[in-house]
Amino acid sequence: MDAEQRRAERRQRLLEAALGLFTTIGYRQTKIVQICAEAGVSTRNFYEEFAGKEQVLLTLHDLINSVALDRVRSALATLDSDDVVRRISLLLDAFVASVTADPRLPRLNYVEAVGVSEDLERQHQEWVTRWADFIEAEARHAAAHGVAPDRDYRLTAIGLVGAITGLLREWQAHQPPWPVADIAAEIRGLMLAAILR
Image: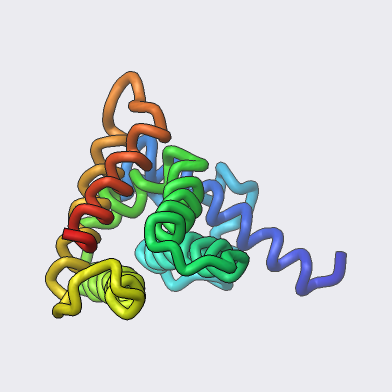
């Protein structure tokens, strides 16, 4: 590997180590030296990649949401139907599959990243807005095709983001875990009821 590839691989190891530690012993309890030891990376190399532990958390939080949104958009791009139920089912299946593929992801996003700092709260709010925009656009799409009321969906979209967040937070905490299919079905039912009512 060249120097750039080695650096990218080292950065990935640091992110993976941090994800594991943040979601087992907790973000606040994790020390940078523990992340470095887990990743097999020196602290000097850590600071070449990140300004500190919080930047690692910001990066992971943003990455989890970005990957999920990309997967949802990719899934919708393959759909050649305007059927609202089918569209919503497809986008929710893609979203839930992305964020539940690893139980650590919802724990990091909805537990460990909450209340850490103003920067994390700002980023969290930015993602709430992006997801609400996406849901609102789907609701407007349904309205444009005559299967949903022609109304303002902004509060509905924000409420759905909160409901989805709550269900995923409970999913990651529940022992034994609820089946992912049950979580997906509940989210789908909530979204269809909210948009089509």
